[in-house]
Image 1 (cartoon, protein in one colour):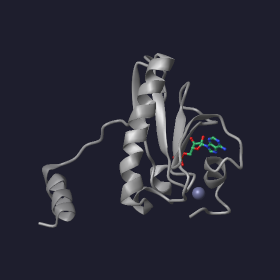
Image 2 (tube, helix red, strand yellow; image 1 turned 180 degrees about the vertical axis):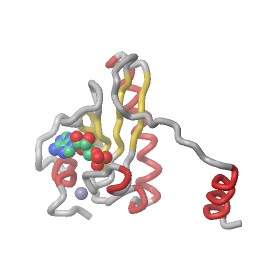
Image 3 (spheres, helix red, strand yellow; image 1 turned 135 degrees about the vertical axis):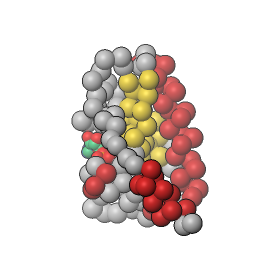
Image 4 (cartoon, helix red, strand yellow; image 1 turned 90 degrees about the horizontal axis):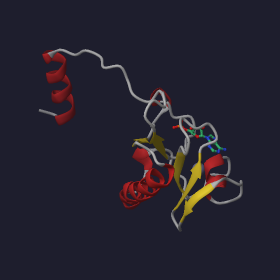
Length: 137
Ligand code: AMP
Ligand code: ZN
């Protein structure tokens, strides 16, 4: 399914031009226009899925395989020192375009891209409570 009002449907389908690094029947990889680092790219399925939880299993499986293959190529070609895969789901998690996408972010020593978090604190009680809520015991 495509969504007529979705910018990533139009980009993935080629209706809106983009700098495309890779394309196949299911996905397009484009350069992000607001890059965290040099080479920041987005892996976008051609079908419209709102987020990770909306993806069909078959597409979800392909996402990581494509991401790994393209990230490896980018890392080598761009001389990156590391690589982040980032994928936001929901406004609270920083999602701004509601068509599933995986960020492919090459990292360079001292690039200062603000992707990592400051470690917080927890308690044994909280760890236990979260475990109980999630695993249902
Ligand atoms: P997110 O915040 O995870 O939803 O990521 C959306 C990303 O899409 C941001 O990194 C934007 O810079 C990027 N973006 C938005 N519109 C475009 C566009 N037309 N072409 C390329 N990247 C875009
Ligand atoms: Zn879409």
